[in-house]
Length: 283
View 1 (cartoon, rainbow, N blue to C red):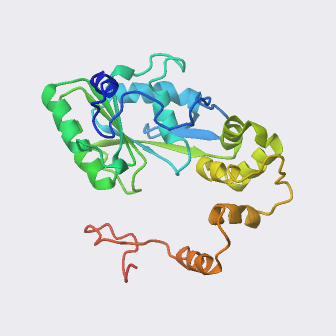
View 2 (view 1 turned 180 degrees about the horizontal axis):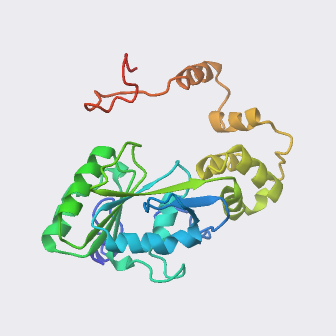
View 3 (view 1 turned 90 degrees about the vertical axis):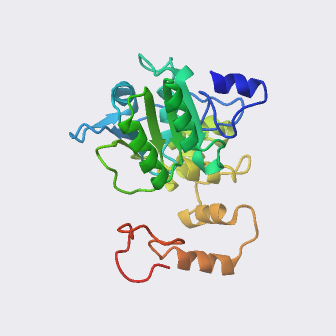
């Protein structure tokens, strides 16, 4: 509530938001959760059962309410993780939603002020009930905050969305994995965002993107009114993403092809024991 009031007064903390449309849909578009088949959720029960979004919402809410550990939401980029987390607070979906007035959200990649660490310390010191949602959270920050939450007796729930894929410490983290099998969600999202694109084009793009919503939307933005993609190959669709309305650049493409052959890039000295390649030089 404090975040909401400060935002209305023009005094909001930089980057921090109360409950809102965190997935950033375009203004005046339908933002209801798409419950298409193909998206499955695996809960940290140890059984490995794969649930539909509809069936998983309730258990996810219960887990966040009851655990003293951080809850990490994993899955490929473009799989709708942020939108699913947003739905946990939505009264129109299922029963017993999380308290939206306790939600505190930030995309850690935007350089929030105060920092995520300072915000958590403040909430812990004040003994406030809060549900912190950290999007794009790097692994070192995740580990530090998860440790603080698990060691605290305060009523703070911590949800981590999409950060570096590394092993978690089961003592401090519960892991929920979301994956999209097929293109149904992307197909419906395209029709919603681009009503004039047509069902055939939407299906073609969604299948090309293999269910990745971000890739699907990037291709759809290049479709001209009345254009049909039925005869385009995957290579031609890829060109649309790569060139982004610019002139073809063979030199740039050659460099991109070379870079795509490398499994991993390390731009800083890796932490001890975290070198993904294990041995040899890391470029």
